Length: 97
Image 1 (cartoon, rainbow, N blue to C red):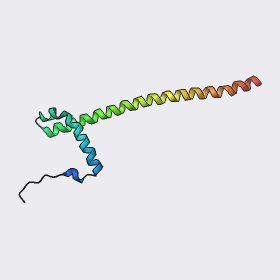
Image 2 (spheres, one colour):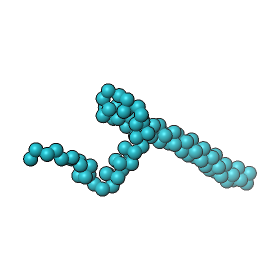
Image 3 (tube, helix red, strand yellow):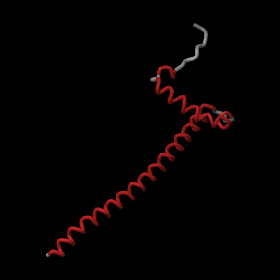
Image 4 (cartoon, helix red, strand yellow):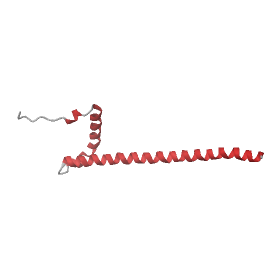
């Protein structure tokens, strides 16, 4: 056969993976002006995809830092309250002694 057919390799992915990939590609498309002006458009598009992955990773890391900060605060408050609860019976028993 001499006619060129377009291969839809994404069709071989699981439907949820294909949807996720399409959403990711839409997100990368915001850099369209940059990668269309490159000599190697496909390579520039991959670099833009990598950039988006880095941004996503940075956002997740920042959220994780905030969560760790909050959890450390909760834990220190819990330890302080727990230490105060443990001191009360000790002081009461020493007073009775």
